[in-house]
Amino acid sequence: MVVSTPRLAVEDLSYGYPGHLVGHDISFRVGAGEVLCVLGRNGEGKSTLFKTILGLLAPRAGVVRVDGELTAGWSARRRALTFGYVPQSGGGAFPFTVAELVLMGRTAHRGPFSAPSGADRRVADEAIETLGIEHLAQREWLRISGGERQLALVARALAQETRILVLDEPTASLDFGNQVRVLDAVRSLAETHGLTVLLSTHHPEQAFACADRVAVLAGRELLRIGPPAEVITSETLRTCYAVEVAVLPVADDRYRVCVPRSYLS
Amino acid sequence: MLILGLLLATAISLGPYRLGPGDLLAFLMAKATGGASPLSAAAEAVILQIRLPRVLSATAVGAALAASGAAYQSLFRNPLVSPDILGVSAGAAFGAVIGIFLSLPVLAIEAASFAGGLTAVIIVYAIATAIRGRDAVLVLVLAGVVIGALFGAGVGLLKYLADPYNQLPAITFWLLGSLAAANLRDLTNLLPAVAIGLMLLALLRWRIDVMTLGEEEAAALGVNTRALRVAVIAGATLMTSAAVAASGIIGWVGLVVPHLARLVVGPAFARLLPVSVLFGAAYLLGVDTVARTIGNVELPLGVLTAALGTPVFLWLLAFSRRPAWS
Image 1 (cartoon, chains in turn brown, orange):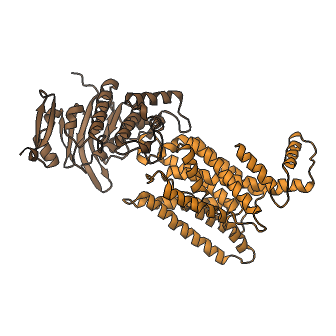
Image 2: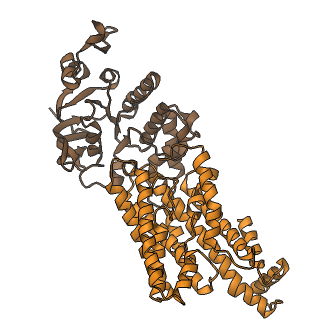
Image 3: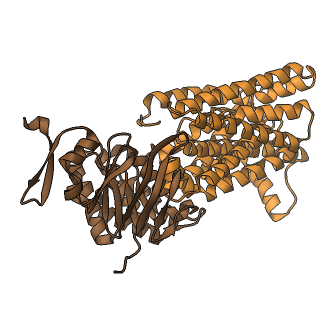
């Protein structure tokens, strides 16, 4: 059997800040076009893990590989050409337009002194179209809603034209409709663009909606990783969140819902 | 640009020695064609030795302060910071006063001013990064105020020690902010520093936009944030220091002008920089012209800009339509 090189490999990774280890000895692999959903309670270090993978934080131990190549020592530019990043609350506090902000996704594709080219603008426009937010393009960043901002940040990451997309709680603080829109967008990007996607969430159910596999962080370690149907069980959720949850199939088990048992009694 | 040109012409003609627009045109024609000037030798001297250095200095200082203010605001992600609030002006003033105190040549005064300004901004930034877990902007501004006060105390000490008949009046007058002593030699020190600073900021304009997103996000978008921060701070501080060395402390220009420019053309540095430069140049030229023509005694420039800047700043603070500043 030929084992192909995984797009992203995290090997024995320990991460955290000086004097404070957030997680240790975490290993997993994600293939091309695969969506991995990361679950874990507050403070379990999902953001820290992502930042370490992105190279924004130096690993305390272990390595990250992309297509077999070690990422240690990569320049910021090389990382930005490999990973598209959607931070939890990005975009800054200056009143740029959405189009200007998405165009910033092209930064790594040109030298430090050069202005965006026509090609850069085309790629940014296409990303805006792909996310279906053309109507927001000329709106001011500070004047659009949280959901609209999240879609714009996904568009910016898409404009980076990377192989891997990392989204840190992209649906946090979004209303229900926007949560669905963001997740649908992510799912379809993985399918149409062959993007490898890492996203974290506080809603285990969302893994059934968009993920190929789920990783659960608990007690500073990787508790479980696998297909949503195998990993998201009452038992895992009890260990992870310390609540009793029923995981119930709906629509001939094409989807499962997670209902706290206290709601059912 | 046209308005700035007209302002320049007006500023050159105004003053104790009146010059009409006709005189200026004739002077320009003569210079352009190489022919004999119809103006008296006295008029030519006024234009070349006094007015021209003065208005060019005002223009360059205004442009430099506004441009560096715009750069600091983008870099520190806060529309409320400026060379004076970050302590750069006080640091540069301290350096320059040391230079005056030691009777150093002009170029050395400028270098001391640059060193002082750079030291101040580095200390302020180091404090702001070291103190985590609080409102970052508040820490930055307070650190700037405190460090500015410390350098101010240093200036006070030097004034106390200075020779009261020669140095003290020079230091005091200069600290109030004035272009009265502007001459061609100062100008040859000021203009290159401003040009280098402006060039650097103009080249980095697209990267500076990305820096407004914050360190991590900018790094994730492929910016070498450390190198960029160093380059922008060096460029902006070079301009501020050169301006301070040439004219003393002229407050508020670096705060209010880029802020107004941002309200007009938005935050993108590619537009913000030229508009700030134009506004700043025109503003300081106008204020300086008023300062030297309003009465028999010339008003200190810094006094006038503070009197104008304070209400504008308070108005911005109270009525700005963008509360999400921090």
